[in-house]
Length: 366
Image (cartoon, rainbow, N blue to C red; front, side, top):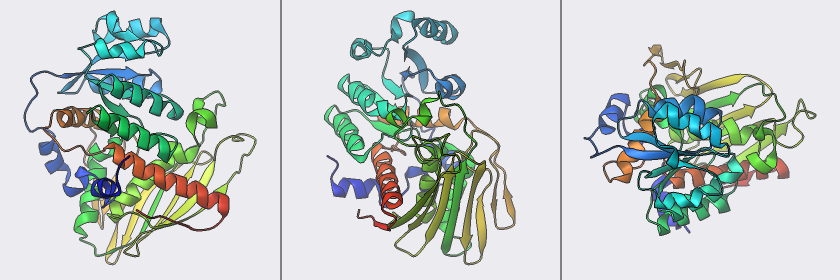
């Protein structure tokens, strides 16, 4: 079990390593030297995110290479092996996954499965002696997050959460602005992320696989943003759930609006939805505003600080993140998005759901 002291040490400011530096400094920190050889990565699950984002990002990494896959479809795995140039002997099924412990070509496992499967495969990877990245949310409960952290600690492997925005230049600059406060004290944070979702066949609409709806899927970006802007942990949460399409989302949350109060008095007003397209981060200070719109997507992010436009171009934040994690596993970087950060966010999510259910404020103790 992660101790209270360890938890606060990792999350006391609500942010990771990236909040202490701007974009240029982060780029330099991510390239302290080179490894003797790239680390072999195995992707566990070959869905849309692995196919459209992580696979292509692994073509751009300096310190990682795609060395294997875990899939329920052998034919798909063979196509990946041919496309990415690894031997088909490094294709595993979910049943044979534990044999990965005997594969010296695989150093790091990236779990890209439905949320409810994260804990199982992170723990199995840890027992196999492999470093682990898990997609967000880290798991579907605080208890599962604690089990995952404990398994990785016991097996002396690193655990990171795929919070790619910590390596997206606009988000990194916003973290730095929030830290330096050139516009005075931060009074109000408004964060929203949602989209019009369709397709009942998608696992995200089934609670037994997703653990929740829009909150688990994209609301977590707003939690992340509020914490890294406030540089604090929330202590009080209120929340409301709305379903404009109950027939479309009988099993998971469609729209949630919530408020987080921080010890300094800063308030975060957040929303997430599967019913509307909404996507922004705005921060209101004593002497002006700053923010991002759109804020958290794979591309097209734009920002502002007062009257100044923030346009830093586009990078593969997934490639930068995986390279950073590779360096961290070798002791050459401080892990920016550790499992403790995922645990922090799951604690907040559970408090939001509790506030919805009780219709009462929920106090958070850290």
